[in-house]
Image (cartoon, rainbow, N blue to C red; front, side, top):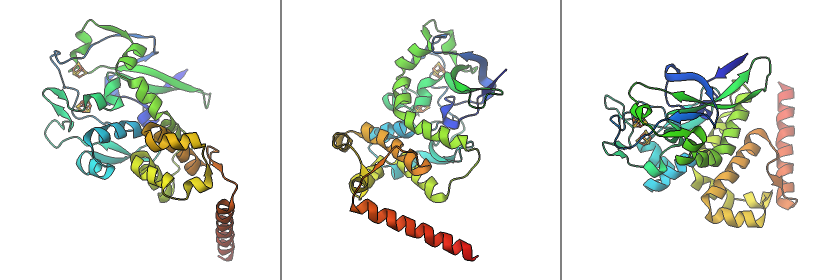
Length: 293
Ligand code: SF4
Ligand code: SF4
């Protein structure tokens, strides 16, 4: 027997709506849908209010770049910090307006003002993604798709046919998935620990690195980071000019910093020896102090 896990792992689920609008049929990339969305549909922009839109790092990076603003400015004007239910990790979501409909800050009667850089969840709609958990098989789960059908959405009355893979490619949702993959892996890993909360400093680190590439750039290039970790020269050069390369590297750093995964290699030099000695001394001191209590 199979159990649909439509509630998680949090933002891995790419549906913006409540589960009562979900069609309970498991779909694959080859499944067909008859649907189209364009400015000519009667319901144009009806789906752009009262929605919960999580912004993974690549989504946030694209929107901030388009608007030419910093993370702090984005949070003040458009964002909210939300603690994910299953992972207890802080992420950024889009803050809906305080009008009656709770409209998205980027919607106008003419459509989405950030259309080319719209979030991945908007790209997927009306397709959702979830994981499947087989009962009795602890780790036997995989991803699948489902449809979200809401009364107001008239796109299903259109004649255009797609497979879900074609829809994802047309909307560039596959690119966004690829760009956020390492970050999703961090969430899935955290979820596997159950409701175990990280200490504040780890939550802060996760949030900072996930939302502020400028901060991470300074951390890598303007601290002793590159004296401590071995990073191939070619990769360092790419990261200096290519934000996507730096973003992907930030996911590897998160895996190392949060879960001690061996995604980073320590250099063998004086700086590293000094740090190791300092950490060992602090550890011994803490152990001795806790023994006295
Ligand atoms: S970001 Fe654009 S597509 Fe997404 S809800 Fe807002 S207006 Fe609609
Ligand atoms: S409600 Fe459906 S058809 Fe209408 S604009 Fe939104 S996605 Fe397109």
